[in-house]
Length: 232
Ligand SMILES: [Zn+2]
Image 1 (tube, rainbow, N blue to C red):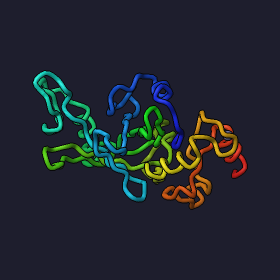
Image 2: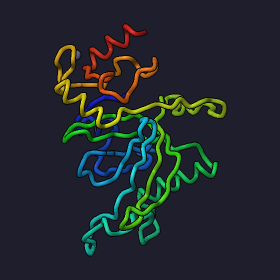
Image 3: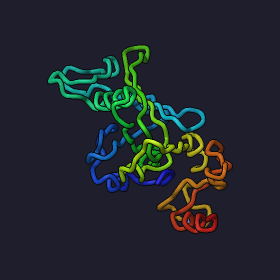
Image 4: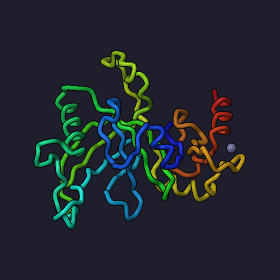
């Protein structure tokens, strides 16, 4: 669930695999999983745009192997010498296929590292665009992802042609970090430090903002449930 705070091990359990790489194309055939970070010293320039609805995710470098001392000096690769695609190439083709109108957008689940060992479930996105650009030294891939409300209907393969996709919004990293610090990494109601969730005090669906820490608090799973029951 979007906004849940989880340990690395839970993230792997959720996805049924050990997430070693940052980019995992169509894991088990359904949706892709990417790991992001906008912290200082993170290896890639991932960016959440101001209003929180769009993520621009940077592709990944050529793997460090014999003879490659500085992957950051080499263009991010699309294909191997054998012709098989790197994850960059797979995501790129999926995005271009969507733009050309050959298919619907790929669904991508995003996890964000907010502190060592602490990850946040950023929910589901549509992969809607990709391109290459210079980072000043070499060419990198960029992938544009739009946050969506829910994917249940898509997984049920209903007719999507006349359905409006509800856009959603993620909480920017600086807001998450502020809230985490202010609430001391614990549920504001009971002080529990496990199964935490970034809760919108006034729900997003009722016009509450994701962009200011004043509207976000840490709640444990139990108190999150109690609260949503009251609202409905
Ligand atoms: Zn609680």
